Length: 210
Image (tube, rainbow, N blue to C red):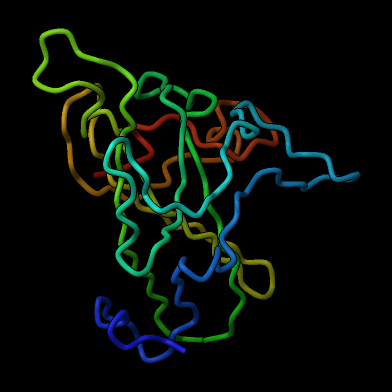
């Protein structure tokens, strides 16, 4: 049963496929790794380290000293964490610098709109103390970006991918803008750093259009 007070925070379409309140559990969200795609349950080859992706977790948004403040609806929210490591902006992601959560949904709704809505928050965990800085630890400009991807597969084999991300900061400089995927590569090899059979994208600057 959907709580009308909670739904009032959104602008849903007439038909609701899923309504996730994480106080009740994961609601089908999970980590995408390992992604067994080959014979014998072998992982797909990739030059991007996917075994460093952390698991999704239910969190009470605990932080140091005060404790927990919970989520906007209930006690728990879905947390996707990363390690405090990164690579240069236009390079491949460093192992552990990227996390994924995935939810699979099957439905039949021809000729209709598909809408996704969410409330989200992001933060950097304190792990350093600045010398002479205004505040200790990491700040908002320590978070580079986060995004949402949609892998749409139709009956008959057609498959499309759509995605957006929020670019928060680059090299410590605040950017604060939304970007959408822009497919520029001519073939699969160009998308994957000139390697065969990989799925990862080539570079960041030309791929994301903001």
